[in-house]
Length: 57
Image 1 (tube, helix red, strand yellow):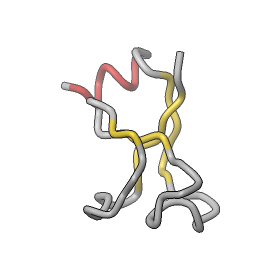
Image 2: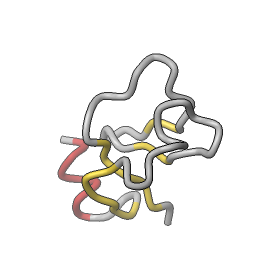
Image 3: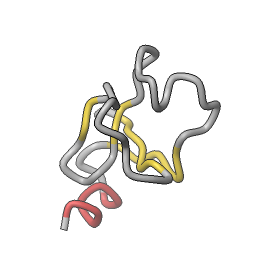
Image 4: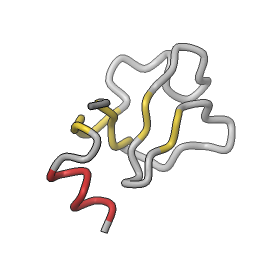
């Protein structure tokens, strides 16, 4: 089970985070968009969980 986040805004083309089917991403320390912000997300959820499944639809 991997936790990933739904970003507040759409990632830029420079985003180096792993993109998920539900629209979430897994922030990485070398991403120019998400490595310097303290809380770049609206919510975290487990992959394959109820929220992830809802967002995938």
